Structure formats: structure tokens, C-alpha cells
Image 1 (cartoon, one colour):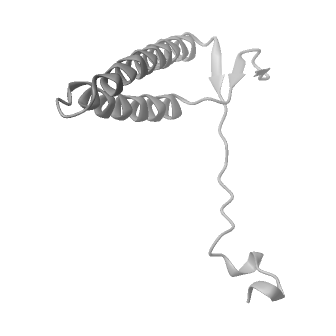
Image 2: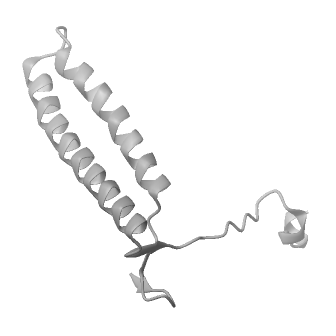
Length: 101
């Protein structure tokens, strides 16, 4: 984590990337909870899924806490989000050599 010219800490993680991670974990949690409720699955499977669901709960809670803290820090001016530019090279013939033509 670096500092900007303003002295604020610069972070590479964005609010959007944290929201994306939370959405992915929530989707995993949803499907893991379905596995816990399966009546046709062996108890050992359901028990393993309960343990995994607890891990996913902790991961989600950590990400939500990080998102809340980052949003508060950005709003208070303690942190600055860094902008990363996209340099997409695929499907652009200017980046293909003779072998790619």
C-alpha cells in the first residue's frame, strides 16, 4: 500500500472489486446451504457442507467488514482509490506478429 501526493494511503482494491467478491461468496453460500438441506445426501456430506458454510460465512463477514472500512476511509479522505487502466490486447490485430496472422 503506497501513498499519494496528498499523503493519503492508496489501495489497489476497489469498492467494486470487494462487492464482486461478496457477490461470489454469497452465491457459494446459497448453493452450500442447499447442500446442507439435501435430504437425499448422506449425513457426512451434509456435515462437511455445514463446515464449509461456516468458512464461507466468515469469508463473507471479513469482506463486508473490509468494504465498510474502505468506504468509510475513502469518504473521510484517509484512503485514495487507485485507478488501473485496462490494456486489452486480444482481438486487436496491431498486437499480432507474423505468426498470428
